[in-house]
Image (tube, rainbow, N blue to C red; front, side, top):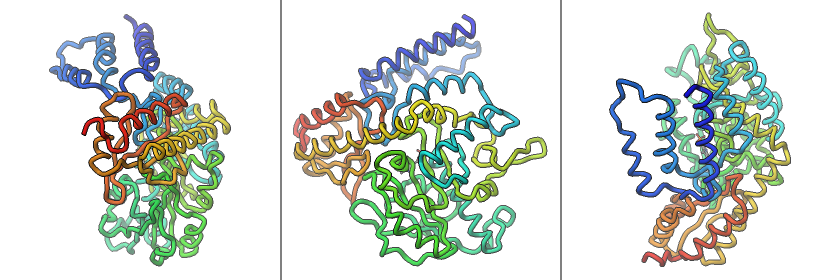
Length: 452
Ligand SMILES: *Cc1c(COP(=O)(O)O)cnc(C)c1O
């Protein structure tokens, strides 16, 4: 079998997989998981060949997938992959560009710049901002938080890249008490020390309480959230950001999924967010593009370019080259599937997807409330935070729903007690899937009775 026939075979297997995402168990059953042990082969001396390898991948791998690319997966705001993005991803793979700069990969550089400009437009953020396509909101957060610190230090006359941290003026970081764990991770990697980070008190929706914030100054990095991971709520940007900016602070907004509200009729939820200094958001969550595709957006392009520069004698490029804005040096053209999604959907298509998921979340919230479940949030976005009659019931409901193979969503802890979290974020999810989810939970019931 030659290369082209092999690619056709792989494509046929991929097509068959995608055709089955509505009917395959949403979480792999015990048998499929057991079969994964067949991958534990000795490293072959003689290769098994490409065809046998890709067939094994499908035979053992496909049944063991979590079908987050289907319509019945409601965990973690994961999103599926839009057809345009999946198809563009195939081209990106075939092209195999090292998308570090124009000189290395002109087509990638042009398309990622185009995608960046469209992103600033559709998210209505300052058009002069740098857009860096990193692997994740985690990695993008790491790079803009590094830029934030270096910039505040530069204003104090300290060159972070040259002098490092020993003896540097102290930079204080403030985060919502509900901040996402990956922001915590980034701060820890950057050496801020979690114990030194100020955790801001939040209200019952997980939002920072503006009048309980300590004084900020020109050595403060303030992190706010567009889309709290449990409730989908937004900090009060219009109130908080102008105060922070007046004090000279750097404001970073973690908008991994919630920033996409800005591309829809829900934009009002984000009022004032455009006043921040930096933002992170994912393509691979709500925009329904493939992993790993995320964006670091930085109002002052130089601030990001200064900390992320990776020019060498054999490899110099402009400050807005992706290798000079992201953690990666060699990188795939991860902005291209994002470009494809934006081009294929257009403004209206993106808005329709976000608004559809919000309407579905509202419906799920109302349906579950009517069935006797406790819905813990206001459902302003695409997240529904739910509890059963008591903690044991919540655990039993989660176990039965996850074990059903019909749907999947995850558990969490909200205000010290177990809850579960239903995210509407797959472009494939339609009314029948929402009905099926509500019906299944209605059958299980708020006391998880079926198994107790
Ligand atoms: C998922 C998420 C992140 C991390 O994003 P990754 O792309 O998975 O690194 C950060 N913040 C929030 C609110 C998230 O939901």
